[in-house]
Image 1: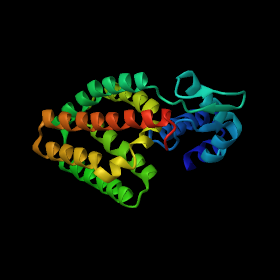
Image 2: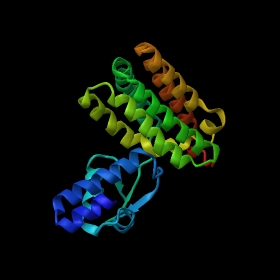
Image 3: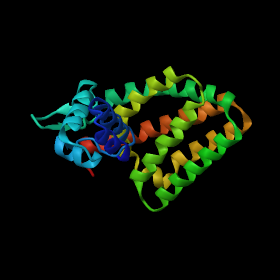
Image 4: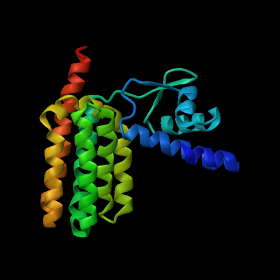
Length: 229
């Protein structure tokens, strides 16, 4: 937010719009918002500390990308994924994120393992206190720090839009994922694989994380359709 204000003060209007888009995009992929949530120009502007123009531009760009849908002249909604959407996104994630994880093992350094352990500690602490939004925020940090080690920026750039679409749905993981610690076990296995330099094991751990999440999200979608909380 401070960066956005700095742009505003320096008069860099086009860059201000890009920064607003980037921040809103990141918030969506981290699960700050939930499926069905309404976003207005005013609410986004207030959340990001902006004027209405860059907020409107950011919303319009995300609507064009399919991450948001219009419900009126001034309101957009975060779409609810269908089971078909969720299955397709999951299959692509398995292919792309599995590849990124396997390649990452070749370039893992001790400081990377330490970084992932620190992030996982923040996730665990958030789960302990039921702060699921915080857990989701740090979860993206874990995944994308790992994927970034693959040294294939185009591959990572292909993964990011998938999280943009599925990020809001990650709220459906909880409280089951917190109670059973599915994600914690998968992340712990990923860290162990990185210590061993075992690309196949690292890929298996991250694919397992995606599959466990898919099963829970599919159940959450069924419950939502049945009108259960």
